[in-house]
Length: 189
Image 1: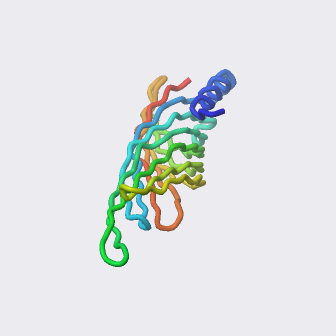
Image 2 (image 1 turned 90 degrees about the vertical axis):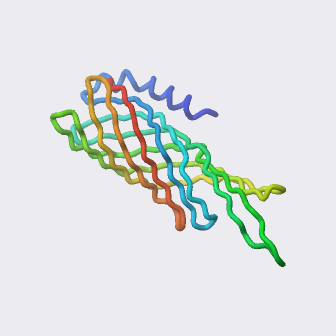
Image 3 (image 1 turned 30 degrees about the horizontal axis):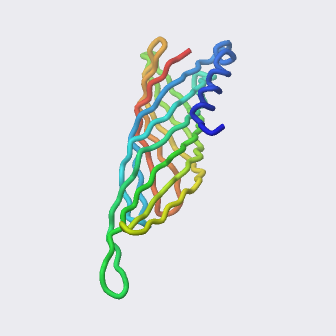
């Protein structure tokens, strides 16, 4: 299927009746956030907006599984490099994550007030697209990445609605760092 968001929506609709019949809690939601990316090799350190469509199934009071599909807006950086024999050239770097698939296991500490503390370990498959130009010529490409993610969050549950503030740090390769701070809204079945 060409559009993963449609595939995720069809999956959600297909599993909703089965999940609703179980004793656990199913959540559907959206996450909006800030994605921070830095790469010391190309002097990039920028923040982009991000979004995710999410599905969560809490099958025990203290354990849940969560999946998501999302994207980021563009990261930008301009830097100057020396040229041979004498001079410099300004390079413009632009990149984004055009596809983020994520699954994570969440440990949950619920309190009677409706507040819950969460921590988790996740796996993400992300497509990173980039463009580097000097104004006359450019180099473009993409790269599929498989990364571990470490998650911490706090959630407040209402009757059929939940709101969560979360932070995720991604384990990228050497010289590159990424993390995301997000605000998520869930509808509970």
